[in-house]
Amino acid sequence: RATADHAPAVLARVGSAPSPAAEEVEEAATVAPTTGAAVVPESGSGRVDGVALPAIAAPTTHPRRTVRVGLQVERGAGVDVAEAARVVSATLGDPRGWQTHDAVRFRVVPPEAVAAGDVDITIVLASPSLTDELCAPLRTRGKVSCFNVGKVVLNVRRWMQGVPGYGTDLAAYRQYMVNHEVGHGLYHGHVECPRVGAVAPVMLQQSKGLDGCRPNPWPTSG
Image (cartoon, rainbow, N blue to C red; front, top):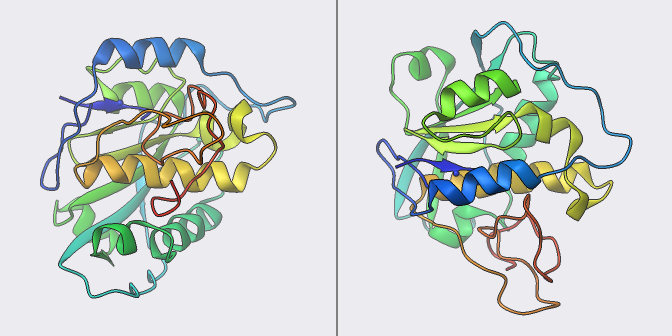
């Protein structure tokens, strides 16, 4: 199986998450951009380049296992590559993140190792068109992200436009995108809002809506 936006995950080496494809199709149809959102190209070149990630900060707790991660960005998708690399590394190394929650250690691998398949999770920033291709058989419809066969596929439409639930806080939404999809790679499935007014669990499909919860991008907070 695979997981879109936060799609049921087909996990290569690290895990799987149970989430029905029908739910993902519904989500893709209901996600809307924030007001005044950036214009995003429907497609880039269809080719991805490996990107050297900055070192990820070591966890504050003793890790039980190491997860190798790398980054790729589609050419022509309109992404600030250096900024994307900074956001991904900072998010994965934040003490509020999965390293603390799951007692893992994220280790950066170079682009050539990613290309050779010597990686556990590859994070890919992709245009809506390439997202649909990489997420198949999930029907992401150019609108949402997914985890599929070891790849965290972050849809540039969401990366650039955000969602209404996060308002103008695009930085926090990008942290959520990374943490939610990587969460699928660490065996975490979707959950529901526990109660109105609660901090949203990071594995809630927050792109679809908050169901009365408050937005939250961090695994340790919800």
